[in-house]
Length: 105
Image (spheres, rainbow, N blue to C red):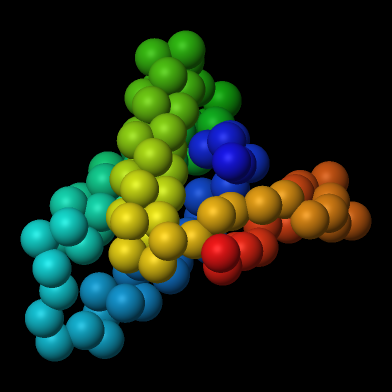
């Protein structure tokens, strides 16, 4: 099973936002996932702004990491519950990030 830290949260957040914008009706589970995505996006924006202005503190780093973990936990649980997907790491891309693919049982 893939650990949450192996996911790249930003593209996943973009995917959730894209579904939210185009869906006419979403489940309560997806609404909860969307709320976690929003919390992560907001915490990341605050931390990025503070980074840019050299005002980043441990408190903002902790808030960003906590929101990211909660979003990734929710993302993984939501999609695994609905698709019965097992996530796997196949390779590392040129930027050093792990490429995530889904394996269907």
